[in-house]
Length: 311
Image 1 (spheres, one colour):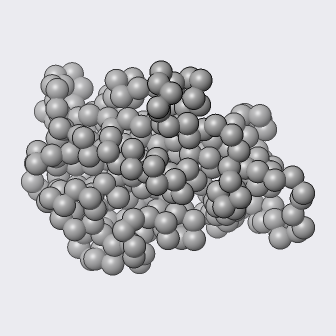
Image 2 (cartoon, rainbow, N blue to C red):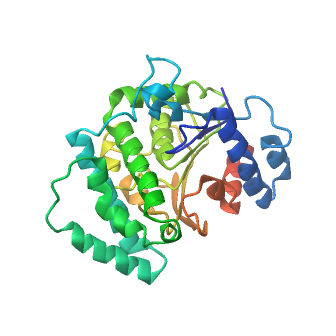
């Protein structure tokens, strides 16, 4: 059980709870320190005690079977997506591109995204599968910041992995149950905050619904919860709403974070009045979706400090 439960996003399968805590907690402490709460910052990192903050790790569920220690483990990353999963992956890729066309901070990026959207309306190719479904958005992303300097090979690895893992979580009940079991194992009466990044924000939101007890803070970072036809309508329970018992829900997004569909989730979640604070944006520079950059922001520190001090 933990006072603060951390929930990571996609592409963490080669790491562990310990390594991710070692990456997240210094950044979280930085944000809290910037907010003026040096005592809490020291508690989170320099003087951390077991149970203060723990990572709900589920990345290993996305490892291929020959990389796992047990044949009984899930093999979520093996093989090609099913037709239904491929359709969802293509829809997710399209949503990312539409987000860039509207929200990218540079007009050049918005224009490029709009041009690629026009191409998406053309005839579909004959090749099937997640890579083919993602190809149009890949071609666009490598010309948008920050992918342009990294090249098509990197963009393809990142986006295909993201499409696959988000799609698996939303469509595979066994994976969803395993992931939620990992989170539930850290949540107890002493839990005061759940912090989720990227896909982890969807996991954290659903976990807050399942938690059932009073929760001072749900903090979502770089969240795809606002991807209406892809993620929002597949969250559980339906219809979506602010989780009962959550006293405050804060959602932070970088304008160039393609995964974060919109900074303001308030219209999408009934019960948001007085609970959901979702109009804030942050600037994460060249890595708009980076978890550590979200965690290190003053705004993140202010929100966490207020929740844990009862303000």
